View 1 (cartoon, rainbow, N blue to C red):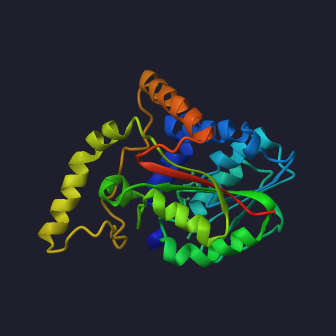
View 2 (spheres, helix red, strand yellow):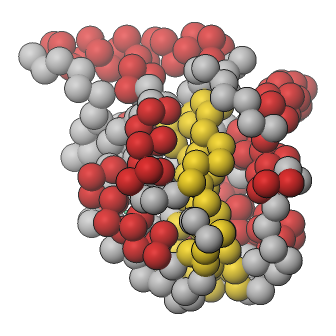
Length: 278
Ligand SMILES: C[S@@+](CC[C@H](N)C(=O)[O-])C[C@H]1O[C@@H](n2cnc3c(N)ncnc32)[C@H](O)[C@@H]1O
């Protein structure tokens, strides 16, 4: 897969800069901690962990500090992401690989995390790679998948990060079944904030729809990843500190519900936690 299918370079720079403090990233990590505190989702001590599509390394750093793993690996397709990840997490095994044909440096992993990656190549292309990843899981091991939700929510941000697909919860649950994973949690996320997200994205959603109609193409929900110019998004910029805190607070409340097993009925993201049968 070439770089034309990759995020815009400035998005990596923004992600690298904001991923420690931005409410969105902090909320994902808070949710993981909440989940691992549940009796049925606990991880073994010093687990072997792989971050598939590790981006600029913020989550690797989090795993290092939170889980004290005996093995920590991360791969990504983007040299820009890998460069930043190696600086953030120098002790991790960070390497170039494609989720569609993943190279594996360890078998018997306890945790595989794949956060907002397969929407880039698309599920059909990534499916056999996901199967290979599941094979590398230890029985009882956890596979955590995070995906963007709803095709109709496609906005300028999706153009900037080259989104090919957005999903509904049923697709995630079906994917877990196809991968022979026991689904332990599956829920929409950013449920309470969805109206605000829709309002913020609405101008760009309408613009994209109008553009597609003007081109004589209905909106298929797929973004065109051909040109790499003129695609920017401020979705990842840090909001004012008070707003950042408030948004994180909302998410922390919602995270506790998801960790305890509540399935939230809508949201702009989806999380699924699957376990490889013993
Ligand atoms: C939105 S970022 C998410 C990064 C990280 N997982 C996180 O949650 O912060 C998407 C990442 O997926 C990577 N990616 C896209 N297609 C990929 C592929 N086929 N194989 C591996 N990584 C890929 C991109 O380079 C980018 O770093």
